[in-house]
Every structure is written in C-alpha cells, then in structure tokens.
Amino acid sequence: MSFSDNIPKLKPYARSVSIVGVGVTPFIRAKDDERYNGITEGELFGYAATEAMRDCGITGKDVEFFIHGQAGPGWTSNFGSPNIHVANWLGMKGKGSYHQSEACATGYVALETAAALVASGAYDIVLSGCMEMQYSIAYPTRVLTQRRFGTDAIFHEVLCSTMTRDYNLFTNGILPFHFESWLQAYIEEHGISDEQVDQLLTRMAINARKMAAINPNSLNDKTYEEKAHESGMDSAEEYLHSKFNPKLGKWIRASNFEERCDGAGAFVVMPTEMAYKYTDHPIEVLGVGHSVVEYANPQNERTGTINAYKQIRNLTGLTGKDMDLFMTNDFFLAQQLLSAEQCEYLPENGWEYMLDDRCMFTGDRPIQTNGGRCNYGHAASASGVHDIYEVCMQMRGEADEHQIKKPVNYAMVRGFGGGQNLLCTILRRL
Image (cartoon, rainbow, N blue to C red; front, side, top):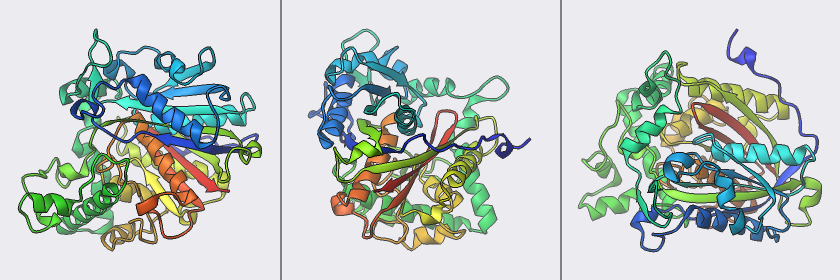
C-alpha cells in the first residue's frame, strides 16, 4: 500500500466557516531589543489576540472558546499547559480552552482545529493563535521577564524529540542534506546545472529580502543591496557569495535558512452566516488537507505535500492554477519553489518564474509575499499564523507597500513541521 492509498477523503464542513479578525505582533528578538526586552509569553499572545478581536469589533467576553498554540512550550517557557497562562490576559478567565503543539506546523493546525470547532456547531466564535519565544527563551526557575539566548545546542536537543529514532539516526531528519534531497531530485528531474541552482537561490534570496524589508512586521528592514553597500561591496550578488553568507550544504547558504525570532499571531473564526455582522471582508476556509509522514521516510516532505494537496484538490475541485497567492513554510528557501510546483501553482518550469521575478508581489504568480522565514523571520508556531494574516491582508487589499497588483480571490497555504505534518489550506475572499 502506498502513502497515497492510505489517505482518507476529506468531507465538507457541516457549515461554512470564515476568518473575521486577524492580529499579529512584529517579529522581534526580544532579548536583544531594548524596546521588547522583558516581554513575556502572556503579553505577546495577548497582544496578537487583542488585535484580532479588535479587528472584528469583539472582546474576550464574546469569544466562546480559545485555542493556544506553541511549538516548544517545554524548552522555551517551561510550561506544561500554556493556555492557562494567557486566559487572564484576554478577558477569558473560566472559559474553555486547550493548547496544541505540532512544532512548526502549529500555526496551520491552529486554523484547522478552530474551523473544525465552529463547523461542528459546538461554538460560534472561536479565537485561535500561536506564540513563540524560541530566540529569547525562559530560565527554568526565574520569572519570565528574564530571558536567555536559545542556543543551537539547546535547540538540537529539542529536535531529537520531534523525530523517530528507534531505527534511524535522528539527525537524518534535520541537517541540510536531508532538506536538500527534494531540491536535488528537482535539479536532476529538470536538468539544472549547479551554476543555475546557485543563480536561482541567489535570486530568490534577493527578492524575498526585498519583500521582507518593506513589511513593517518583518525582522529585517534592509535589502541585500543595502547590506552589501554597508559592507563595502558593489552588489547583493557579491554580498551573497561572500564570507557573510557561507554554505550550509551543497547548494544551501545561510541566506537560504530560517532566521529564528520571537512573535505571536491570532485570528477569530465564526460561521460565515454570522461573519458579515463583524466584518465587510470575511475570508472563507474551504478546507484543510492534512498528511503526516515521519522523518524516516525518504523525501517525507514531498510525499506529505502531495497527499495534503490531493485531499484539498479533491474536496474543493480547485487546483493550484486557480490560486492568486501561494504561501508556504519555507525555512529552507528552496521550499517556496518546490512546494509551489508540487501543488500546481507553478508549472514544471517554475524555477524560471523565480529567475524572472514573476513570484514577487509585483509578478503574476506571487509566492510568500511577506518575505518568508529566511527574511521575514521564523517564530516557529507563530509563523503559520503570520502566513494566514498575510493572506487576509492581501485579500482585503490592506498589505500596503507589498500589496499584490491584482485581486486575490483564492489563496493556498501550505504548512509543514512537527516530524512531519503537511497541511494544505484553501482560503477564499467573499
């Protein structure tokens, strides 16, 4: 039996569900930023949740149930049940809630679970969000206002817990050569030379940084051209081939890898029939495909993406070609291209679209218009919520300087993480 044979058929929601309010914090590095040093988990989550509720004109009194997401509550915050630590910040003391954690897929699961609760009829107004402080982590026995740097050594120990290690080495699932396996297969299938791969990843990095630099919520506010000039270099290309951007694998450089940070995001969902009482621009959740293929399986990310995409395509009758925007978990930059092409958002020569700048917010097939995890920043669970926030802002026409130049009626959000959850969600502007 193949992986695909084992995937169930998605069923439509019992009632339509829409996003009516969204809110995010900027992505920051709290410990290194005097403006935010001393901020706590409750404040971050509360900030995003309050913004989401304010966005649709409600308060905590109106919310019937909330879901809290955090990828690493144990290692970053020393929390066992993180949801109980934030309820008082939201005006929801005594109301039902729970915590969920699926590593970097947590933000996407946040929408899946909230939509399911509303679609079932159990609740009408649900708030769901995610918070992460993986750069500025808590001490085990100190107050939360005092933070320490989340080192790679600590993070590496955490990764062990997200990978099966009964009959395989856990490091096979996270080092660059694992994530390069899909890229290598793509290179071989398309007959791309090493020189072209380098040109491709360089161009993708330059464009992603441009989009991040003009986003007010981004961790980075300088383009690679600006960083090059600060370093006495003539161009972004020169900077990206210098000592400031070393190789981490055969093709992947530091600019192609996530930038860890701290942040939060939240959204409010309710039945679409109620939505227009709270917003003029509800964003309907058409469904969520979901597949889990753990790390011991070769190219597990590719397989899971295929499965999740098939589920949502069969449910909705829509394909990647029908989408106006594609957002994806891209803590390795090449995943923008690989997942977009696998989900039929780009044709088989999608890498040429990247080289021609057609996947910028100014192009005809925009991808990851917030700049992505390598440039906008990656706050684990919160990143998926920021992707959903970006879709909502683009659909409303409220993305300011990086607004897509055409109407965004349909968007696909591909998320992954955990070890390994793959989700494909389709959102529709009403």
